[in-house]
Length: 321
View 1: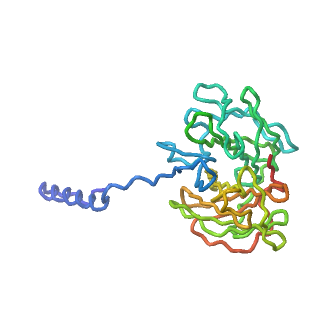
View 2: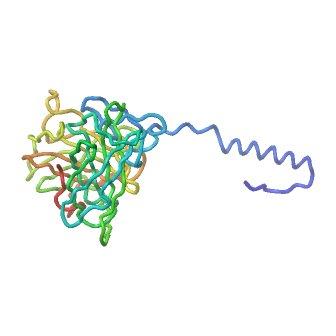
View 3: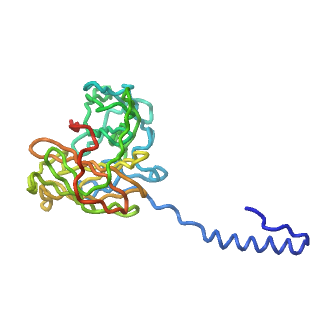
């Protein structure tokens, strides 16, 4: 802060100091309220699942960070044993989850039919994959992976250790060697296409509140009403924040067989985003025995055009296993 004037008289100097102090008090105002809590409470059933991991419930300092930004949390760590991803074809990607004692975790609480979900995506949000590794008796996980193109990839492990009160999502960067050619993020649109399916999203992301998103699936202009359950739900939605790849995993409002949820064409989600910004949405859905991924770009508070994009951002043929 700069003193506006130097006053020679001592009395005037005291008056100026007093006036400045009063002014500062008015400018500063009352103490700011604490930042809004960004953690979420997840129910045990597959109903409303706002953000974070599959069944994540964060408290304390960890709640201030969105999921996926840390390589370690609550004493758990993701440790890649494979140092690169292959760009020439599927190759085993191996890693471990270690616990507070430093040893590998070998017991998990199953979430949505799996002990662990692995999400892989390039730093420019291209090449999304949602796969399910196999675990050896010694706690080593392995899954065949092929990166669609060179670049730096973010690998997310979404899991809940047995006896731990909440799910965790840990992230680590793994390179795919070669000439990295980053891609611009596609513009926001309400409609996208994948393998002859048209998927439309209705609703907008609003930070600090639960945002309702309804995704409608059609094929050749006909609404799809016989979606098949995939991992215990009719759809899975992952949202990643552009820039730092903060990870939000949301699930639909309802579940197959609950007496109220239909098998399409609409899948409704409730999502909470931690901040303004641009997000990439990845919807996994199953029809005809094949899991497909529809991708969207969403900007908080923005209205996207409804026409479908001319091409997909991700690599051809998303991987699910």
